[in-house]
Length: 414
Image (cartoon, rainbow, N blue to C red; front, side, top):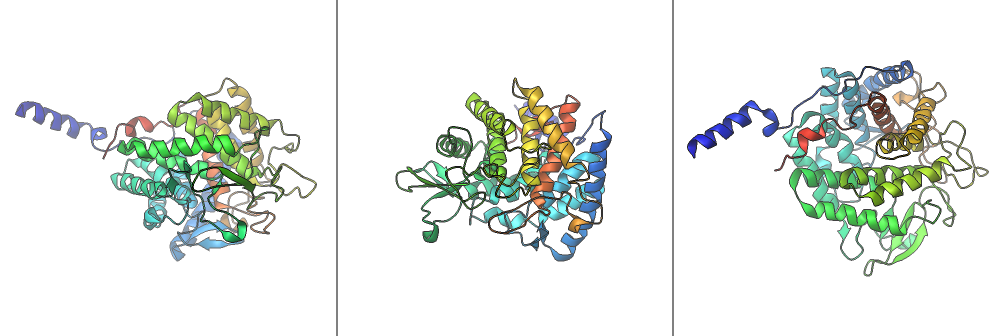
């Protein structure tokens, strides 16, 4: 028996993946189109300058209008995530160290249960860092973050409450479509820990959102409010997008949904999520108000009201389409659409010149049009999903797995 135990110890010592995930080359592709290489060159120059500001102030970039924000802001994790993506692209140690330093600023947010945004904040930085490095400390922070997010789940409604009740808005249990993105944190933490409660919560939230958040034409409003004791749907509402809740089709919200259900198919293998993602994609790609360059208006429902664009909606959508193209029988069409969006974003119309645009990468991103907030400028999450979409594009283009590191992590448990 002692010999068997000694043998097992030797195997673990000789095979680092047995105790900690291996660090693998982030990106190995043969073909990098010139327009992609140029976009990453610009992104690196902008992000290097932005990093200096981050380290000087210990604050994170949100937008041109709002500038640098504290770690509690829902957007705070995106810039560290962008640094991880740049390290994925160039595999230079200096970018890894920058990503680690910026990510470390977010550590305290693992216990912040104020709203659902902990998923946005922690998975974009610690999640990407963990997938690239297998850092055990990151793994624990992700699990703690997921448990914090799970504390907002109600078994009565079957949903995670996005924001607190608000008497002025007549909100009792508000849920926003953005919340679909945060389910990835739960699913990753489930795989790391074996905590099936986290998986149950993610599936329950996805299922109920699929049932009540979407109209028959596959559009969705920003907010749906529920009765907290029975889980019955009370009403559609808005905080972003058009205030006409009967037809509002906030472009970034549609992209959040597409991304979220594509991710849920990846994590569960359940075809209902794939079908739902395909139906969202088909609705958007055939929408009569989709602009020719495929960078959506801030809301699809009424371009006569305003034709202000939102590059963040395009970046999220393009990244989702890249992944969806690897699962769907309509993959070629989805890939072509996502490629067109990425080429538009990488063009001089949307890609900032180095040293301009307050060091944000993309131009013409819109936060909240009707609230006159962050209009036609730069947004940290637009940059993050643009980088993610470009990396996914390169992997699909080169016939590679979108997630080459997951095999090193999937069997790890606390």
